[in-house]
Amino acid sequence: MHVKEQPTRHKPGSLALFCKVVDNYGDIGICWRLARQLQHEHGIRVSLWVDDLISFQRICPEVDINSESQLIAGVSVRHWHDQQAEFNVSDIADIVIEFFACDIPPAYIKAMAKCTPSPVWLNLEGLTAEQWVEGCHTLPSPHPSLPLTKYFFFPGFTNKTGGLLVESALEQQRQAFQDDVIARQAFLAKLGLSLAEIDALKISLFCYPQAPVNAMFDVWQHGSTAICCLAPEGVAADAVKSFLGQDAIAGTSATRGALTVRVLPFIPQPDYDRLLWACDMNFVRGEDSFVRAQWAGKPFIWHIYPQDENLHHKKLKAFLQCHTANTPDLHALSLAWNGVTGHGDDYAAMWNTLHADFDRITGMSNDWRQQMLENGDLASNLVKFVNTVSSGETKK
Image 1 (cartoon, rainbow, N blue to C red):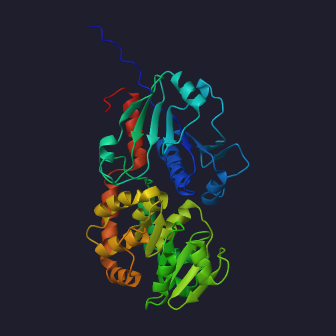
Image 2 (cartoon, rainbow, N blue to C red):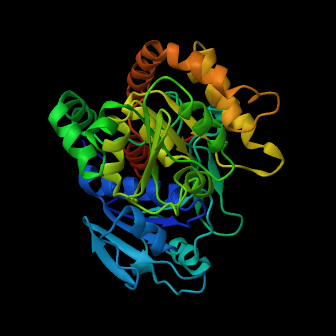
C-alpha cells in the first residue's frame, strides 16, 4: 500500500528580537536575558536589534556603543536606528519577536510576507498578573493586508501563561552562592562594603524618582537595626545626595544613625543577581529586576512603572493580590511605596510591622519562587509554542 509522504517539518533555527528602550534598563535587560538564553540553551541563532546601545552598555560592559553590528556572548547585536532600513527575504529570521508591541521596520514585515514558510511572528507582551492575560496568551492576530499572522505571547504567574524568564542553571547558582558565606562576603567586599556593612541588614534599592525614599531613609536612620542600603549610581539621586551630603557617585557612602547608604556602580546582570541574593530585602522596579527579585527568594517591594491616570495601580494590585495575600504588612508598604491613595501615612509603623514579621515573609518568598518555577521558564515555553506553530499543529 502506498503511504503518502508527510511534508518535512521546519524547525526554526534563527530569531530576530526587536527592542526599543523605553524604561532605561528594564526593556533591554529582559531582551538581553532572553536572547542569551535562547542562544545558549536552545541553540537558536539570535539577532538582537536594539535602539539604545548606551543603556545596553550599562548592564553589559562588552557593548561597543559605536558598533553597528557586534557579536556578544554568541548573540548578534544590531544597532536599530530607524524604521527606514531596507530588508530582503534573506535577512528574515525564522522567528521574529517584537518586544512590548514596538513597531518593527515596515520593510522587514514586507520581506517576512515573501518568505516560505512564513516566520513565526510574536508580540512579547509586558508582564502582568491581571486575569485577562490567560485568555489572550498565544491568541493569533492576522495582518490586515499581508499573509502573516502575529501571536500574542504573555509572560505571567500561572501555567496558563508563558511563565517568567529564568535560566536553567540559575536556581543551582543561587543556592550555591547563598550557601557559601565566604563567597558572599567576598562579593560584597568587592563592591566596597566594610565588615560592619556586610553584617548589617542589607537592602538593595532600585526605584523610579517618584518613590518616597526620603521617608524610608528617615525611618531606617532612626531605627534600632543597623541597615546598609545599596543604591546603584543615578537611582533616587536626590534622596541619596541629600543623605550623603555630597554628589551620589559610585563608591561614596555615609552613615547617619542606624543607616548607612552606599552608592554602587551599575553592574553586569550576573552580578546584579548576586546582589539580590546577598541582600536581605530588595526594592526593585519595572519588570526585569522585579522578576529577578522573585528568583532571589527574599522579601521585596516592587516599584511599578508609572502610567498616566494611575493605570499602573490596577496592575500592581493584581500582583499583590496573588503574592502578598497572607502578608498584610508587605502589602501595605508596597501600596504606599507606589503612591496608592490612602496609604503611606506612617512608614515607621509599616516598616516595624514588616521587620518583625521578616522570617515568615522570607519563607513565603521562597515558597513563591518554587511556585513560579513549576510554571516552566519563559524561553522554553516560547520555543515550544513556536515549534507548535511552525509544525502546523492546533493553534488558538
